[in-house]
Length: 188
Image 1 (cartoon, rainbow, N blue to C red):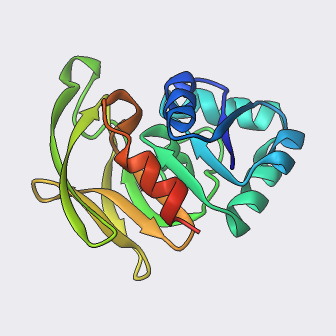
Image 2: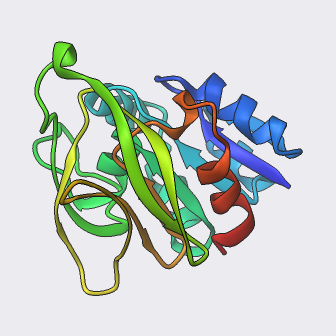
């Protein structure tokens, strides 16, 4: 399977390694044409304002929205912000593919970043996962068709709506491939 990884900013290389460790091809993309070769797409974390500006500059918006309307997309941290319908203040509108409202940088500044255990439910199994939160957003509200799949305390930190999976933390920074595996094997 070919998994596209939006390679504009952020740690897309770690996502690529996770995909390859699971036995799939990682296609780092910066142009809309690369999406035609992809079966699924990952939008990594990074700085959401920088990523959305580059999406606009490189004229990727329509291609990303068309892809996400039909095929599986996973967003992590900034990727979740860009997928959300209500992302907080951005210089351009978000992709609007996921019915959630976000509070950006909800835990504070870079110095307030942290690692803690999150509780996930993947394919009916409850698992603990190392959540790496870097200037992470919080999910303030979810639409009626959005399924919470992960929590940190009372905060929802991972959600799925049909073909869209998103988390507020960085699964690519943990030594655990279960979130990537769930996305590749279970999100259709």
